[in-house]
Image 1 (cartoon, rainbow, N blue to C red):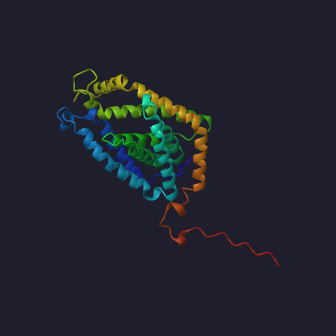
Image 2: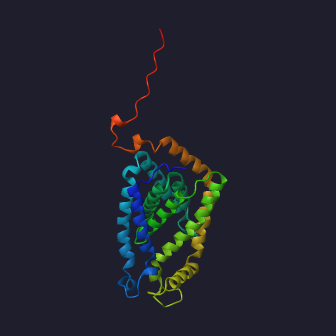
Image 3: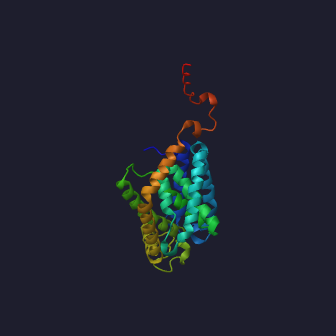
Length: 282
């Protein structure tokens, strides 16, 4: 099953670089040495908050160059606006998040490249709408982008099996998303080494991983489970209709048509018009 919006080789390299930087941005507490300056101060969130938008801009530019035509951009705008509008309905209360199901379904139908862009633009538009702009926003955008991209990489199945697959993925992705966001601020939530849940600079990776898991269980498990349940239920309820609707839109838009996918295509390279039908005899 080919994605309507394809990822070109340069965009694939940009995504690979973004994945490597994502590991550093989220996982630095597990990797940093105890004498590193970043482990001793509180500059890490601001450092990555400034770095991640630059990384995202490069990746989005690579995906958009030749990969998103005017029709794909229009669909991206519609889905991003819809996601930004419905996200405040949950507002994260008790973990009820009403936007991730749309990211999963959009990434599933239009492919991983489109999903990566959709996750970023939806969370960014939502933050502007609700005033949720802060150093946490780049982490939220990046996490949502990987959730939508992952949906586009799932195996090609259809029918009931596809819904079960998407529901299971939604539950796991929602829990991992919560864990990653916790990891981004956990080192500064508690004084280093003050409790059994605190970040311990230079401790073995397994030890700090156990600490952050315990921190997540103690502080955000209810929200993470609520997000997972909400997303799973919404995927199961709306999936049959939205998947058909989005796929119908993708077929009618013909995103993969080379005439529309390459704005620089010359008229001479366009396919010839069909032959004219002969006039009926008088």
